Image 1 (spheres, rainbow, N blue to C red):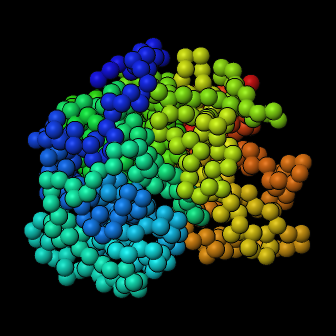
Image 2: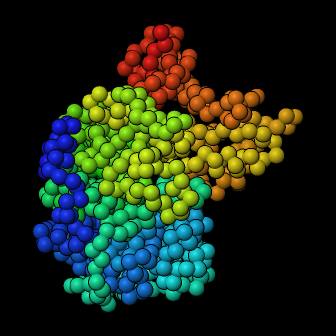
Image 3: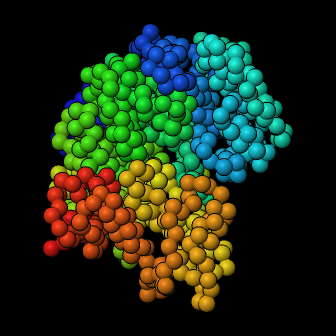
Length: 629
């Protein structure tokens, strides 16, 4: 591995020449074949369907994974999938999910879809990507994924074939005898043919592709954005961007002897690229515990024991998972761990401190986004970590902080907040989304992807995220469009104005909240509006956790709801409640806008208060606090 400790290290890597120097794999199949040649007998991927530290698990070597991917790619091509055709999958984690991810990108364009989405959303993505083949689960106890996919395929007449993966193959005795009696029926109301994935894959040759591999750079994946409401946009990813993510992992993060525990879903770019592509590039070993990852039964309770079982060197987490882990003791030998990576949402400082104290490990926080094929920046594993920042831009990644003026874009000065704009091998210039109209105004000066995130870069080159220009609510790493909540509540006859924002939450980072102004003369209670919201908003994650009726919502001069004031109200309400519950004689007396830190809660005390106690309570949140002057 190459040192990644400072800006000097990044510049040294870049000085060796441009990233696209002709030495990198030209296709996903070449990428995987190189790993097979270098690390064939080493373990590549492991999966255990249950979370117990001694439970049954399956492991594929790089030789075996290469063979399985070859068979699956041949199968997809036999089903009519060409290099511009789409293989979608709606799956929880298992070995065959990783096989489908890789094989789909070899035979055509792979399209991972979040199985937590509703059938109409899944169907809309299938129509947008014109998917020809869909890979999903065979009916199985305790999951409704097959039923949702059947309903979605009925809405997508372009789908010709549905391939079903049976999780029964991962079970041992006696569960494998019991499940067939508990298997629910899955009425099929679509016209696509349904085939058994395992049986069909077994018919294909494993030693070579039955078609010519495409070795020119091309789009090989479609990933929908993280929205859990409305119609997510679909981002296009080229082979070069996918390989670039793997190159970063192998160059500065992982080596062949590493074992990475990844309970994140393979429909998300974090698991698919920084993890799977890095495993391929480095020859390291990835372990996926349970189909549902962190949501799986017993994963948090057994987490440290799984680290001990697999001799894990790195764990992959998100802030919500770290918060849950801190409620469990470190009850195993975790001496093999060298660090843990956190992404998808900002990391509260107090959570970082608690984790470091409990596990004796550094959290390496980073930043990425679907539109850039993920990776943008990371706190240097070998250098100074600035907690609250998302580190330094990776080699061959350029980040500009821009302010849009009447005459164009202007670079911000050091520590000045503006929009984070990115250019790197993962950014598909001008064609990020499949829908052309979604690309309008997406780039600054022709090549710099406008992320919609607000941030700043300090004098040492560290990037900080201070807010979101797009006002998205990020609930545990999932993006929720506030417009969906607002439009639904506006359907109530008593509602005149609505402002939906993310209120602070120690576990999820943010939870949706709505502030309402009633029509003049109308009457309604918050209970009425909450019941209405539950009916009108189809996605459960977007249903507000708090609805409050105000005499009048704060508005701009042109009558638009002014959301910063609503965020101030929410911060005050949540922080005051938590201080009171902890018996701390202090209250929020104001929420100010700080140039570097965004919204900051200012507190006043009415008795003796220890700063450490306040930090323990409020430090679990993303938004900082300070004592009022």
